[in-house]
Image 1 (cartoon, rainbow, N blue to C red):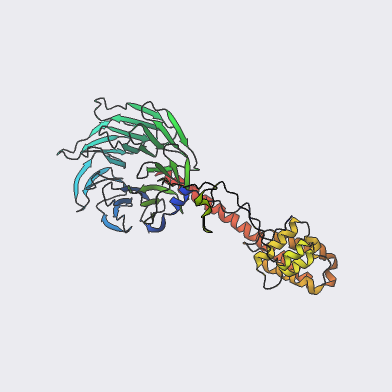
Image 2 (tube, rainbow, N blue to C red):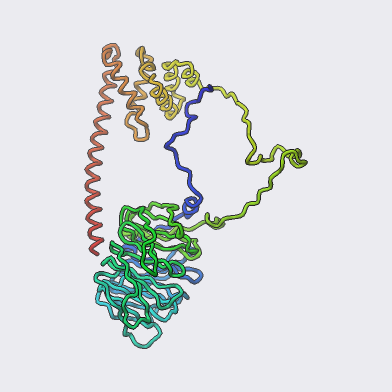
Length: 505
């Protein structure tokens, strides 16, 4: 059996190979990080080219360029925090709702306020244009749902049957101007028909958790609902739950589709952004962010991924030009050569073999390092001596120590040494003990040295000093662990308080 060199075996805990889907989402690089004045409450992309996007934070709206990732316009005509914004399909108008209960419509180009609607007495959480571009729907903390006529001269609204708690979610159909859905902290999801004179919901679904966001699937046959630590997919006709996407630890605050609507993207307060196949509901990729996620936006051309966080941090990631989507498959035509054919015998040295060909590898005899030769002949003491030479890297020395431990030969390697041969081992342990990047093997070596040579400490003048250094470093490590445990307690307390305050708001 051929001897395996030190370090030739791959660690089982090595890096996992990324799937094509994960590589695609990892390709969104060079994030532009912007610090807003308050929590990023909403991110909305315009469906019309060039796909600018609005960011609602504090008492202002900023409109960003999708090409540069920089703010090009700022609207500050608000007396309080802006909660939501929404572009009309043609990208010319922007509807905005704030915590004063005011709904306003702005001209995107001039930033002029064209319409102002006063009907809510608490914060407006979401506003959406209907598919025919003439109507605007708003939902509020006052539990009401209102329909506004953007083109009319009057500011009166049409009200629908209210919820029993804060209404936080609203979605309108992209094709049906009369269909919309709402979600509330009363755990209910409701689907309404604008033309229904009763103004009562045609369907009500119990989500069993406070509802944060709703999205219609293409064709309006399904709806995705986030609320609690999961996303549920419902049949929009009968209200039956078809799937539960539960790979989260905290509340899912935002869900959006990608440009092709084949991927469902969900952001959560546990700081994770997860991407699912919208048809099979399979988890495809996950991205970790610095702070709890409050809002997510994806450009219609799939070139920009924007994430807003509770701390006010805005992350803008762009897909490099030329990279293609992992789910856009390319057909590969393989030409197979038959064995014995004329073309088969004309192959050159650069020709690749077929998938059924068997490759016979030639044994290459490479010279082994000195410590490997001694390990192969079970001369453990000499192997350790060579591994401790100054020109040998620390990583290599640690691999030799690991191999000695695996062979139960560490005690044999350190036994029977005099002052001169013991000193390099002692100095190596003193230098590398308790280094965060070093494995536990160094601690086991220190323990073996203390156990074996303590009875002969009088024969080694420097050994007592070595034991004192080991004890000092261990005590320092214990103190640091205690300090870190105390610090973690403070951080957990602050995080818990912040989450409680956030939920109250």
